[in-house]
Length: 121
Image (cartoon, rainbow, N blue to C red; front, side, top):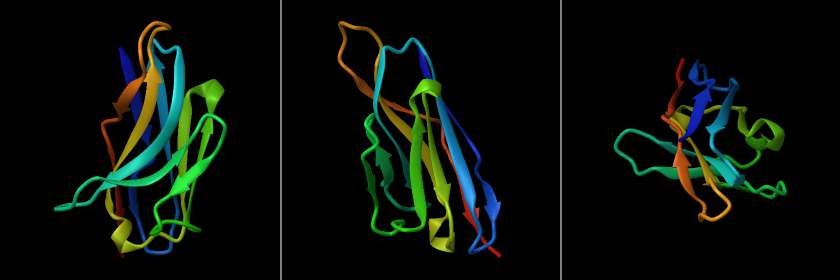
């Protein structure tokens, strides 16, 4: 089994910061692209940021210059540093990772359970 466990969500005032963490565990051979998605009430899940094994990153336009995605391959973890938070950043944030479980299988997407981020005064 593979699990992605997120932490770091919470309530923060506009302009504040939060750091999300996500650690993968279980039977894992390789982890490829990792990233974060979010889903606000009544909206579809959307990409926030991704990072490849080599460190190449991609961001949604709405979070560029405010959020930073990083990873620690040795710890099988991905992080999201969120600065200058806005009320419109309020959502459930989900960790995602493309993981290969055995040397003979293909990789597939895995998701965390989600962590709530609320930006409000």
